[in-house]
Length: 323
Picture 1 (cartoon, rainbow, N blue to C red):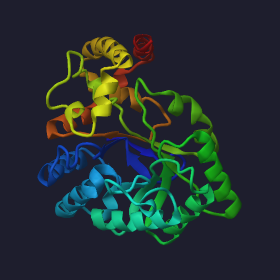
Picture 2 (tube, rainbow, N blue to C red):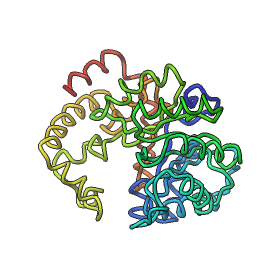
Picture 3 (spheres, helix red, strand yellow):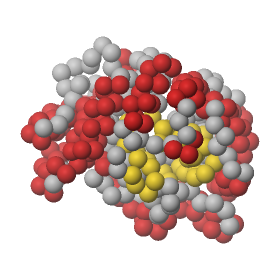
């Protein structure tokens, strides 16, 4: 495993990490969660990603139980949560957003579900236009001072919003955000590669990436239709199926078919090439993997070994294939 610093900060995270979005509770129970976590940890993964909104808190409960049963030294791994959406199907006004009340209570609830004394990383899952950024920054700072959070960050904030958070932290002598968690893959690139460029340079922000496989599209498994056991057939993910069946979705399949041909030439599968492509970005701290089977996870973890094959010439071919 390769380990990368969280931007300019001292924390070193595994270049590949394991997250529970979609899979835990929906496709992965407690026993399988333990097996996947163990396979990841044995491969050198030290970062496990979660959020209050994943399966309305059940994802954190499953992961917390698995981590407890596995019994690893707490100082050998990192776990995250995220706050914004709440953990109820229909949250009340005080059970969502980035108000001081919800941030503090959501943190305490995440600690209980994950069965830990502190969160290594805590993300503001989306920006909250109804809460002043100063209130959010100060609330996160207080959690850091209390030892309940070690590093806090954002997820899918604009560069302007993150810059404003840094300005508040600097002027009020508060803890600034250390990392951002954006979507990043061959189809979603502008924010990570262009919009955030000043953030890496000016603030030393780290980046933990979600959806490197574009919800499975970049594995190639949808090239010939939608498999019955795929997430596109899960209740609650109809929006994902509709996007896949749109004109843009069809164009993506055409790109993936060319991408898959390059992967075969390099001796790897399509998903491994997509993950390795993300890792080639020097501003990426960790690429979060999701899996509903241990073998699937092990295959994805194998992407790291193929990084040397992504030469400048290969990267240029991928750019051409992506159009």
